[in-house]
Structures are given as structure tokens and as C-alpha cells.
Image (cartoon, rainbow, N blue to C red):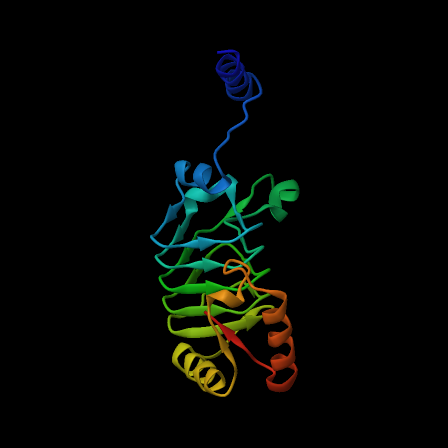
Length: 190
């Protein structure tokens, strides 16, 4: 009885007095107009411009690795001009955006695209391509990239789910992976 009353009072104080929203930042952005497709994976510490999220559109099967930032505004003109520049961001289907990447306003990323870790996407990236760098530049087609990785995979050790933290990897399996990596340079896990 007292525990339930405590929870009700706590919820009232958090929501009505302190204006604390218990939803995730992604849920809040969606309620404010962010468009996001199905089967997306937004990993930890990624930031979607909450102040202009209705200008951002994310397709189906998009992965943001950790610490991806998507910006739909540029406040560098706020002090000198009194206005902030805005630009939409559209991300297509089947896109992977690597860790630490920043996507700037007024950019469109096509379908079947890989953006390398640490890139700064300051201009649009066409479908079926791989782009890396600062600023991000296309370095090959999506099909060339997948073919190259497939070749590497054929010559490298491949591991199942039990070789991941989620699969409960053992110390023995960790040591096996380290030893194999020293010989091959690349490894692949499900």
C-alpha cells in the first residue's frame, strides 16, 4: 500500500513539478516528429538533434554505431545574425553509420550505404556507396566493399554467437580469438 503510494507521489513530482520525462531520447524525438523506419539499431551515446528532430528522416534497417551525431541545425550564425541555419537530413534504407560519425544538416544519404567510423558527412552520399573521412568521400561501391569483406572472411577465422559478450564468451574463447587475430589480422563474428 505504502509502496504504491510512494510510486504515485514520485511519478507526480517527476512529471508535474520537475518536468522529468522518463521516455528515452529516441521516444521523445519520435513524439516531436522524427521519422524513423523499421528494424533500426541506434547504439549508445548517439545523438539525434532533439531541437529540430522533425527535420530528420531515417529509413528502414539503419544502424548507428556508438556516438553517431545527426544535426539538422547550424547555430554558428545565431550570435552574428540572430538566426540559426536549418537543413534536413534524410538517411535511406540499409545504411550503416560508423562510430563517432557526425552527419551535418542539409545532407541526404542514399540506400545501401556504409559510412566509415569517425567520418564527417557534410554533403550528400549517393546510394550503393561507401564513404569515409573528414569530409566523407565515396571510396568504392557498396558491392565492391561487400565483395572485399567476403574475400577476407573466406581467409579469416569466423566465430558464432558464443564468441560474443551476449553469447557468454569464455576466457578460453577470448584467448583463442586473440591468438588467431595475431596471425590473420581480421576475424569475423556473427
